Image 1 (cartoon, rainbow, N blue to C red):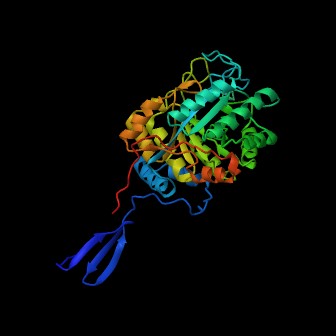
Image 2: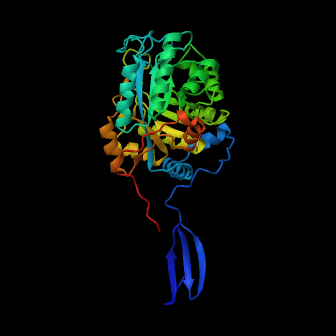
Amino acid sequence: MTLCASTTLRLRTGGSLLLRRGKSTAVLGALPSSEPVASSRAPVRRVWERSDVQAVFDQPLLELVFQAANVHRQHHDPRRIQLCTLMNIKEGGCSEDCAYCSQSSRYETHSKASKLEDLDIVLEEARRAKANGSTRFCMGAAWREVGGRKRGFTRILEMVREIRGMGMEVCTTLGMLTAEQAQQLKEAGLSAYNHNLDTSREYYGKVITSRTYEDRLSTIAHVRDAGIAVCSGGILGLGEDESDRVGLIWEMSRLPEPPESFPVNALVAIPGTPMEGQAPVTFQEMLRTVSTARIVLPTSIVRIAAGRHLFSESEQAMLFLAGANAIFTGHRMLTTPTSSWDEDKALLARWGLSGMNSFETPRMAAEEAARPTHARAADAPTSPFPFRAKSIAL
Ligand code: SF4
């Protein structure tokens, strides 16, 4: 195009390109916006065939990452990362036989069985997490199921109530739940419940034999029916092949609602477990899985969970680019290491990222808004970080 002296080209806010000649103005087109698209539009949920998920997964890796990054920007603010702290409130002595887990009583590992933590200790840890910028506090107990543990469960309900009252999102992972227990957790203020499917339906039996895939789906259904957000994901590096990773993501896409959160763990091989000799997951495997999950589960939080410390800072940044938008931070993630709050704050700052507020996502905001006014958090933590990214108005 040739421009004469009376012709100007302007970029206007929103990214449209204007052509002005004399008194006439023409909109030539829109540039990609620097602002993420608001997620207030009700997303149309796609029904995925397994072969479609496989086709997404099989693309050349950087093409896949590019597509995932685009999908991420349509549903999330790509500058925001949720910081979660996961506390082990009852370690070891679990009767299940999950082949990767140091807390199973069937294996000789460094984990020793402990009693359920006292309320005060847990609340102190939650306050510390909040002061350091975590906005979701998760509590894990190494149990097959809550079952008939009435006193312990009552204490956990109190923990949930108190931590929700601090203005944090609260998550627990306590094994299998009945519908009634899920309802009690909901009434106490639980935001999310973690119950992983771990891997594909076909490979599952190679990893766990003491409970079935259907058992897991049944607990997930109780959680969802109680109105609690479902956090469910998997572990890479269990000896599964790529079609099992596809199978896991496909199973998630078939749930009646997509999981609010999809954690992707890289196996941390624990001496004494049947998985102790497994080769570490490569970064490319992790990136491919995260990218595929982002495309197939566009509204879910994709969470980099155990094993994050196995990847370099630049690799973690690429996972964020591909759509991962939550991390665990603090001192430990159940029984495996994680980065400290200070390290993670510095990491996010270097990449122009900032921590999410509590109840920032549409799913959590709706849940908080539905609570009775008196039960709502007066002082939900906001991002304490001074480095919040600013967009440039064009
Ligand atoms: S993963 Fe959970 S259920 Fe399985 S052995 Fe470990 S603590 Fe028990």
